[in-house]
Length: 312
Image (cartoon, one colour):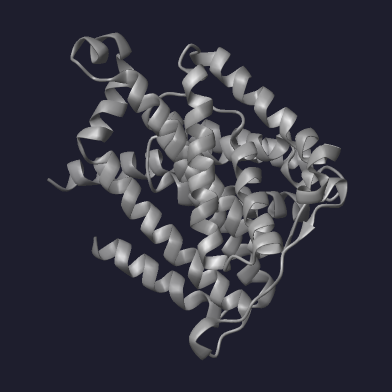
């Protein structure tokens, strides 16, 4: 616990010691960490594979942009409202998804991710979504007269939201609910025979995971100050899945490691070779998975356990 407090305290100091561009990158790390945490809860702990979480990320971003543009909702209120909308959408999507498992569920979520950009461009929604032009998101000033730039305050606000969501996830996954999710993942028939309501837990987990992705999308819209259909292509969903696996899908801390990976490793690949950036990225991804098959968090935990045994 002391290590977690120290980590959050250190993270809270960063906006005052880094440049504006670096602060933008760090804010996106926080945003991605929230989305990956929701995906870890769904895939790593409950065993439901999703290739479409970029769709819920997009829904959260657009919900926030529309609330700010058309209703004048305060940004700090638009974020949880967007999360609630995504929870409902995820729960409703999870109901028919109960009939699907494994690759069939993955394909259904894949279809959702593929369809989302086209739906956002649909002329019938253009008055709300802006069509292919997208929607601009206004900037604000720090509240209470705080002497902070908007990007500094937004980072701190995102960090506070992320901290609350990580605490919520930790309490859920360390409770009886978490044990039920793991039981459903590992032995669904045995879990059902023990009286666990698998349908309820699966749909609720899907809703919670979508809520996390939606809140991340809402914060991402505030960071980018613009949303458009092309920002939420299939690549976003694949990127989130990559971050979840590389960071460690069956851990809470893996969301942070995965967010750091998907934010910074593509930049490192570009610095290594501008002519073959994607090839270098692919090599780095293969190297990570070869050296850390259980993800970064899993490898760190295994190393710590090994050192602990040697010290005894």
